[in-house]
Length: 130
Image (cartoon, rainbow, N blue to C red; front, side, top):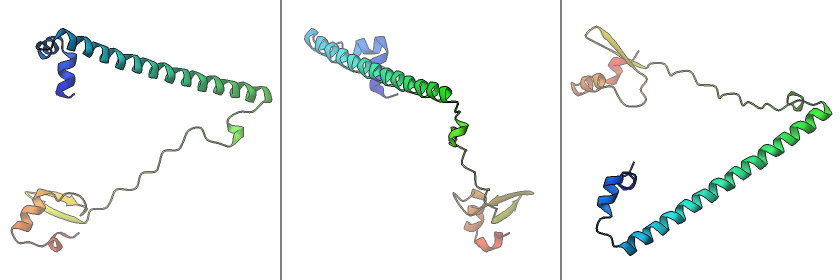
C-alpha cells in the first residue's frame, strides 16, 4: 500500500496530515471524496445490473433449451476449457559434484553459483557436460 493510502486510511495519521488545512480546504476535500464515492457506487450498480441482465439471459436460454429437450452436451461445445498441457521439464545439460552433492543445470536461466565459481577458477563449461 502506498504511503498516501496508509495515511488516508489511518485515523490519527490522517488527522495529523490535514492538521494545517483550513476548514474550506477540508470541505473541498470532503466534496471530492463524496464525488469519488458516488462514482464508485454508480459503477458498482451498473456492473450489478449488467450481471443480473446477463444471468437472466442465460436462464432464459436454459429454459428454452429444456423446452426443446436440448442439453449443453448436444451443442457439441465444451463449457469447461481443457487446461493447457504442460511441457516436459528440460533435461539437465550440465552437472557438477561439490562435496559429494551433484548439482545439475539445464543451461537456461540464471547460472548456479557453484558453476560460476568453477568457471572463475578457469574451468570450461565443456567440463560439466553430461
